[in-house]
Image 1 (cartoon, each protein chain N blue to C red):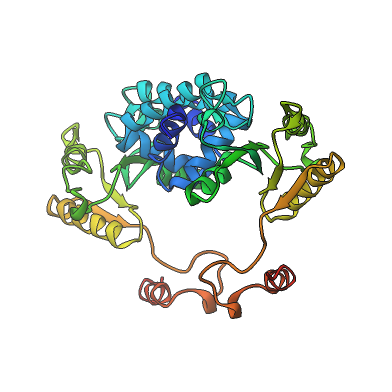
Image 2 (tube, rainbow over the protein chains, first blue to last red; image 1 turned 30 degrees about the horizontal axis):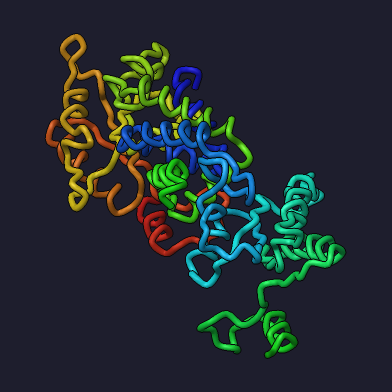
Length: 201
Length: 201
């Protein structure tokens, strides 16, 4: 298909999207060219604009277009609480609950030595620096809430961070594990029930 | 999220891709911004380039960057055979078999009255014009092979085209329905077996 060069390049470029294989990429390319060229051009502009303007917040590491993200700048947030998460999507989920009024630190990943992601890649040193920041001679952050995902890698990440923070004498907590709201015990997996039993209150 | 404006716009733009919902779009945006900004910019360029350069072949309607696509220009192809398909992906599949040496007509869709896709939208008049083209006083196209998909809409499309062509006295055939190569009868659906029985040879 040397002839359909632009089309071929478009299909290849669409495959860079996570979860998109050859067939999906072809379907996307055909759909855009046949039914939504305007959408395709909008997508192109949005990609260029985002790549140019979106950076990381100097404090919490999340995506933002400014030096410091609006959440970190917000004077109404409780600066003594710091919630550590894997990515901005998790942060958005926590924000939607409306139950958290502290600040965040977004790792932008999780420890995964096999993929070459170590403590440096998830910004461990920045997190420790942040926790060690003194205001009027005392630590501003009093409690770090670990909210990495409850997967093997998320748990490992949480464990490693927790060890480093405890060595510094910082209070570290982890999101509660337990039975999801609205679920019936009969259908909840055994590991979750066992954890809920141990962590009963 | 008025603050993360470019990011929000990117997520919205990614949702224009078929089969991509909010969650997938977010995941794609985060992935591109975090791990593959070069890929994102390549995708932007590929989209713009394809929108600018890819058009439709004047003869067969498929995507091409030229007036007439290379397949239609190829002097080695049998011009008396015309295969009618729904889209370029189907055409690519048929080409990969290496079993067809005639020309194509790509409908770029299928009849779907509820979605406002009628005979005009699938280029019915162009197909009839094409079939009626005379070379030295006789029809160049001797046989039209209907290769629309074997779905309800594909079958309807095939039926409508077939009626119009038969009224003009053109030979019309349809891809054979039957048991897929490599499959065991036990696991083939009953409709397929029934068709294979009726169409036995």
